[in-house]
Length: 58
Image 1 (cartoon, one colour):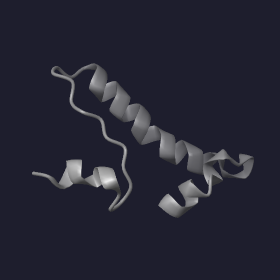
Image 2 (cartoon, rainbow, N blue to C red):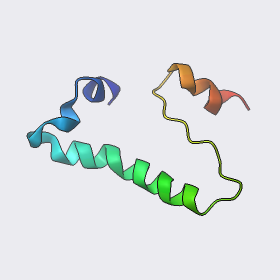
Image 3 (cartoon, rainbow, N blue to C red):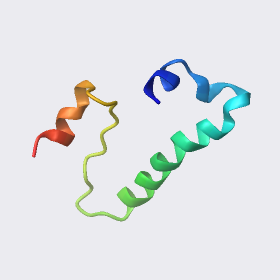
Image 4 (cartoon, rainbow, N blue to C red):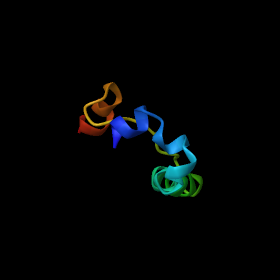
């Protein structure tokens, strides 16, 4: 999925479903974050990306 995202397939009109697949978890996470206290840290990362250490640190 990352290579497709990096190639911006989600921005092409023919791939609207792919855009929706990528956007749905982001919207779900934002809804969850609004109701949590204290607000957890939201991290966007790719598999083995530099931010993945936040997910693997525990």
